[in-house]
Image (cartoon, rainbow, N blue to C red):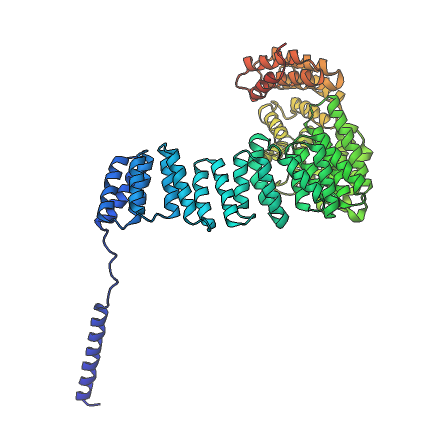
Length: 619
């Protein structure tokens, strides 16, 4: 290639690059956003002034904007609102009339009437609203606009009149049904409201939830909906196959705590809907949660007799047992009430599991057997019954951990400590994460302490201190405190072993053996700090060995002799509880609660003590 050609190529490339570069440099840029105008700035400033409550300056700015821009409705509305906030109703009315001119809209008239009403000109407001209604009497929106204005002013009777007038004018008896029903309720015309709701449900039963939601606030507020119930009862009588009517009636009975009528209505509803007791189950649960226990029990019994051999009947039997079990766990110990509930739960659960075949075994089945085992160990002292529950749980894989823990508990109660340790150890293969694993870990720590392995026990128990919300937390804290603060000067840890023995014997319900272990600690190592705790345990154990009165007296003696001990307040509270609930001595119990508050005002028991004082008679 000749030099001339090469030179031409270089020149062409250079020119091309120059053009390309120039094109890039001259590429058009997007237009800059428009700069804020003085008008926009003034409006924004007025809004900020209104928000800060500086209405005078805001009104001055808005007035200027309205004068300068008479066609901007936004400024006019903002100024009207500002006038209204400062109760300058005359100015607001004048501006609205000026804006509306000779042909005001229905909305303008509704608003004008509202301002006139706020200014105290009720007759003028009524005339203005009538003018609004007469402007377009054949439009539903006309009546809704005025109705909405009246409802915001809480003029419910007038709002009702507007809706009724609109219904007549439109010739539509179904018009404004939901609005009228709500206004009737607000005006206290509950029977009329119910008639509207009945008519609504007659055409669309799916609106039942809507109707309930509308009625709920009025029931919550006063519990009285006047003659509305009679209207609904009449509708149910006239249309016995209407599920929505009957459902609403049953719900209203329950909400007004007329549980006998609710039970009857839900029974009919179950039959009508062919739901085989499901609605009654829900009702029973509602009653139980409201502490209407007799009603719940009656409902469960009705399910079993009315819908036998159904899933609902089996579940009703279990839930009856659940309620008795719950009441047992909540009842004060050592009372006839606690004994009665435990027996009810025991009998009901046994009847329920006997009606369940292995093929039907489920989570509910497993839970019942676990609670039977709990009752067997804690109230019946029946190891054979606990073993039967353990065998039944083998059919449910999801209860594998609970079954292993139960195995350890049974062995512990049978004084077979090696088997108990083996069962608990099977649940302690890593960091405990479940309630079952934490309980097993605590039991292993106690067994270690009983055997003299204090360091192992301490290591196990420290793992449990990370979750103080766990059910076993209090037991873990008590054992950890003993292991940490009361180790002996020698390797035998004699005092700790006595103490751990007493705690283990208490778990085994060996009350005499536990008392003997604590007594040995007190008599053989009298200067050891653990002796004071041992004395507390002996005082608490006396309820099993000598009775309620003896234990209450021993706990009071402990609180007097060792008033600086961290458990002195607990001793007083336990003594008062025993006297209040088990001994039925409210006056003496109240005296002890008051003593607790006076001597230990910062106690964790002080709040509960105050509650009990308020509920007990002064003398």
